[in-house]
Length: 640
Image (tube, rainbow, N blue to C red):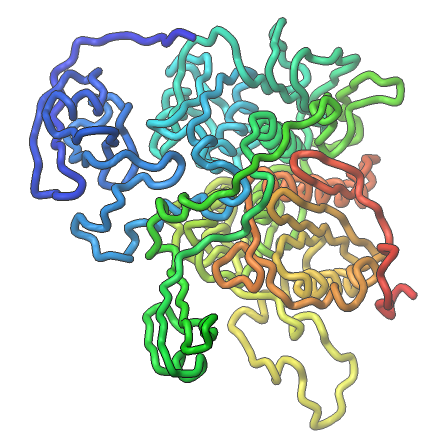
């Protein structure tokens, strides 16, 4: 591959270069605009011995950037970052109090680092070609994944900076509808990904719609999508017997399904995944106290980390008291010292494809491939949807659902009790960015969707509260003097809007990490004759299914599991923390959106089919068994 570029005669650029550890050492320099920041640091004599990086005040590595992009800025020269991890020097000095937000941004990929080799992912060099918006969809997931980071790897596209990019399908995922490739390059550069616009000898990945021209002799990975189908594979393209691709309500969801499967398989082909999943890692501060029982020793110590744990020493002479460091107090380099030893094997020939991964199959009974959008409407009007949870799944499902609706006549409510967007949500929760940290998820999600779809506050409701039994379990008869469940649990300022949203919904999407809350929503849906689409994802595993009037959560899973209150969570306080990665959450959320739109369209007699329930495992998609699971005992009392 050869880089393309052009040189312009410009005035020298003024930079201020500072030592990242001792920021009293600063020097102002004037350098040609096309000089790299790394070379400017070396020429100015501020580069340390050995490997180093240069950072902006926000902590982003700009070592390989051009000086012309940083006119007048103060840049910090320090130790080389850990690829895909720290973008900041690790001294813990430099004017910030130890344990403030110094390392917090560096833990963006914390929840996936036990699934795959983050350093390898950050160092990927990927050549990409195909349909503009299709490639943009892949760039979004690559960025969330932490791939192709500046100073480590890059993603290259054969486009000129002034060429226009039109966003139609993915308008709910970005803040613009028309831009140039130069602006797209700048957007991802600000996020820390190295996007190069240059001529390619050969692309590693091709991605496009079924009616978009495909290159001859392509030998890499590919995705063909459209008309509700997404086909992925590697090597030669299969013959497409028929492609009648027009705009449909599930185009955006179909593209995201395809991109997620393509990217996950691409990573597997490069052995990026660990064979053994590590669901969490943390640092512990341990104190030993002799001749004191564990309970008394724990009471006798005080820590700003909260309550610790206590055990007796192996020799029986004392107690060990342990306190877990929170992420913001944890240097990411320390966590990277511990990783699994073995990698997952690469996919088999059968897994490589071609494989259908979209809402509807493209493979025909005769063995050929057909993309036909018959029966799928372009948009749905007068939709009223409720999304329970706008985290890993819901942050994809909500905008992709709205992408298939007429925003002028539709309403969406989003209910989520998480009061804070956390930094380790940002590796997969597409609606949020660094500016949303500390904000309630439902509030931030509603604000973002109103802006992107041009909808009013009354049409996009963000309800920062959990769904409780008091909103669902109402008694038809109450004797005088009876105490209602609402009175027992108390009243909230959100109760009225929650009840109103439940009563007005036409479709519900369950995107939660809590089985009991899913069952509560399902109960509310059954009482109102409304279908519910259920989704779940942990690590590289996911499920999408829907429940109507003939089957419920209790029927399928049994009372014990359906009402389980354990919070299986990607949050710090989860009772059982789980790994999370964008390829899983985006696929599940996208298929939930497609399934919900198809259920509504079928109710309105558009003549379409509804996608089958699916299991997702490690980039592979399979049909999920419907009905009651064979080992389930107990009934719901509603379906016999």
